[in-house]
Image 1 (cartoon, rainbow, N blue to C red):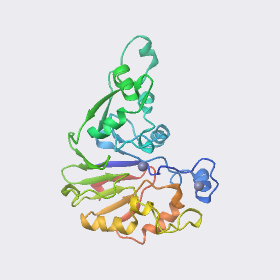
Image 2 (image 1 turned 90 degrees about the vertical axis):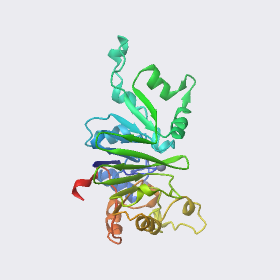
Image 3 (image 1 turned 30 degrees about the vertical axis):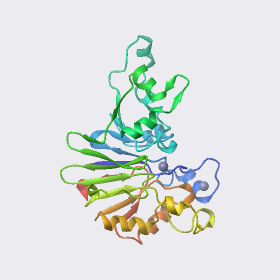
Image 4 (image 1 turned 45 degrees about the vertical axis):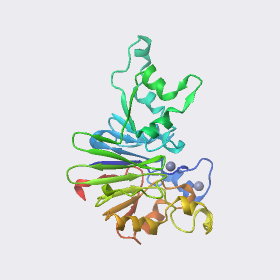
Length: 282
Ligand SMILES: [Zn+2]
Ligand SMILES: [Zn+2]
């Protein structure tokens, strides 16, 4: 399996507009891998994108993606979906619209039924946007599912509250993608022995942006994992390697800081935009 990190940033990606902190200034000056688009990955073997943050068009242009056939959604939070106008950017052809010719290769849109229902609630006075893309313009084709078997790869979506954890399996390898809202982590046998788990939902370090120390009673401690809890999860499911993603600007760390930090752990690294995970090389 070849999986590319399209965006490794968090709800607030990097550089944050108008922010003059040193991490944002460096990201603005150097670009990748110091800058980070919103949270998204791409599974090259099946041309499948997971989630569409609002900067997804720029992220796709900066990636090595050649063709997108499907988009799967993890959950309905704005930082994961609000770039869904990318469907228009990818498939809308106004010359064809002018001749009443409909798009003949709609993008498959996958989500668990509950998540799809949430997505369908996002609407204008004309109704759900996704209805317009599917029924009005044939740019997409929605399918609610918990599992999808592709030629070489099986994708399973495991519920966790209103969100989903993805598991991709081929004959030899297993990759978990758990971008956001995944605490408490669900119990599932399928996680056992994964080669790689790409996971967000974690506050990185005790000292954050501008020296801020996370208070003991901060609700973020309940909502987000810390790195020790991630290592426990890694041990519990016997996961070979963990890649941290959804890295918030508020964590106050640059690409170089994460490089130093990952040396303190075994089997853990930090994602960056354009990072390629090739399971055949593990
Ligand atoms: Zn900043
Ligand atoms: Zn998120």
